[in-house]
Image (spheres, one colour):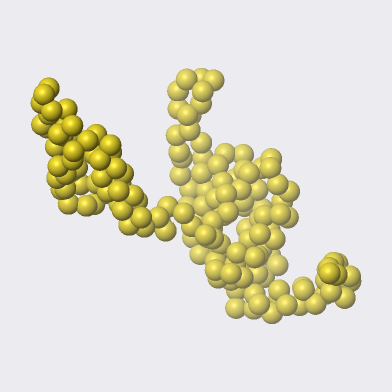
Length: 176
């Protein structure tokens, strides 16, 4: 989405009188403002932009159940446990990785499947262009996205694991 700001009328004698036209700001129809000063013009434009931003639906670009996996930042079982938590909350999880981290995503998915916690719903592979500053040109990287869903006995297995951890003393008790 792009905002076009056009100043189409101003005289040398009266610089305070400026007519601007905002054409389709974030889906809003054309607006015409007759403002007494440039401050008013800027203020009116910012209000229109703010209204447009507030009306944008960003649910498609940001998924609450997506885990972007790195092969260097976190240990493997951090991602396994995070995926379990996301499946508890959202019934499915999307694991995503680029390049060398693809092996980590596949390993996480296989651990969850082999433990009977997840089933594969969708696997997508592609290549993406990543800007490489050292080479000065874009570099293509492999990308994978794996969507996993809960198995029918996911909740039972998680409850049994939690009970087992409690018996073994793995759960820390916090006292106030």
